[in-house]
Length: 260
Image (tube, rainbow, N blue to C red; front, side):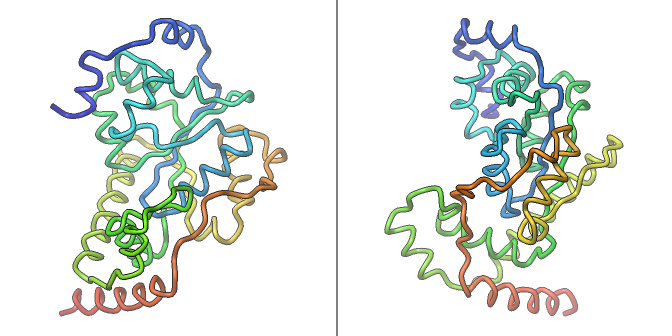
């Protein structure tokens, strides 16, 4: 049985919490950050949560995290859980949202019945222009378990990261993985006549406040209330000189293999 089907087959529900969320109003504006991995979504969502104008966007459809989230936002079905988690995480201005990869989104929504509710989301399509760099970053993260700086990593994981070597075949695997997710999102947008707000990792790196203001205007949050939090973000880049070197090498080898 799929993990999502298993979770909602016979869920343990906090009835008092369930009733409270059922009585709460839906957010006036709700959005999905339709992302691909290693595109800057964790950094972006950390800032969005800190500003308190965008709800508390997080990875809420990942089947591995559902058991935790459903305790805060109990739901007897996937549809009810999604409504309740967004109600629970909205900010005072009535905005709420989440981030999700294509695979997570496709898996979760496959168990939903209310397609009209899905149609009420605004979509923010977050990608990375440099796919080679994205694939290298994803390779390093998955090979070592070192994904983000907000987690304390074991000496073993850090040693793995330090000793990791270039591997064309594995980087190519993750490159293809990213491309499949991009195609999934693009097909979904096309089939449902969705015209998302498009932003990129590179846009965030160049001027994150401008990106936040664009998102604010799109989701009906006042752009004039958007700022860079004084404390910044706990999410920092973990790339090193190998990222640039391997990105260039992979891009060359990928091109040569395509024309071989």
